Length: 280
Ligand SMILES: Nc1ncnc2c1ncn2[C@@H]1O[C@H](COP(=O)(O)OP(=O)(O)OP(=O)(O)O)[C@@H](O)[C@H]1O
Ligand SMILES: [Mg+2]
Image (cartoon, rainbow, N blue to C red; front, side):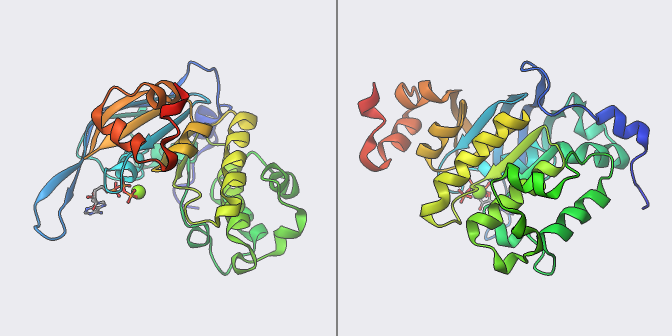
């Protein structure tokens, strides 16, 4: 395949996911992302001078209201979306300094789990042929050669291998998406509202699964959510975004029980039952 990575390049990036706890996986400095306003045509900052650091195996959340820039930040910070200025280091490499080949070799380090699992899967491919295709795209990277073992990781049975996406429930499809992410042995899994498209009855299971695979594989997790209850149960640190800026960040427990920013307080007060306040 043209542009396939060489064994040397593969070895250079072939580190165990996770690594030491103090290894910095992602380091983002002064990130600015501008979008063009669809109605006025003017440029605006969807992400405005944001700093973000994620260490090996850490779980970090970005929370904030709709339109605050969470998805834009997550995509730009991981090199999957454009950025206007700022520096992004992924596994110690400055993204803007990398050529196409190096980017390609680095790409599997970050895997994204999207909101709509069915939208992420090819309707013409069985689960097994989807796994095979991923392996052929990154032959040096893939950690699991055993499809059944991979499905076990996401608590699915072997009978899922021959299914097409339309034969999977939303929860099963999202588990398949998580398995596909794990196949690449990523250092960082980005999950953008990973359960908001799912039936309420399976949301908690899928979140618990994400927390478990993080612990089992040592991958770090960057979770985008507007659901603070979810974040509190899964993430160690949280960044609160408002109008493109991070207005507050810190350990989840601290941010939720002793918020210092007015916007964070409003966000918490808007939570159903406002149960955070009673936890002081
Ligand atoms: N490709 C784009 N072109 C123009 N504007 C965009 C684009 N993507 C996002 N925006 C705008 O940038 C801002 C931030 O959007 P973003 O999708 O990052 O928010 P979000 O916090 O993820 O929201 P949600 O919770 O609804 O997913 C919004 O005003 C949005 O309308
Ligand atoms: Mg979003």
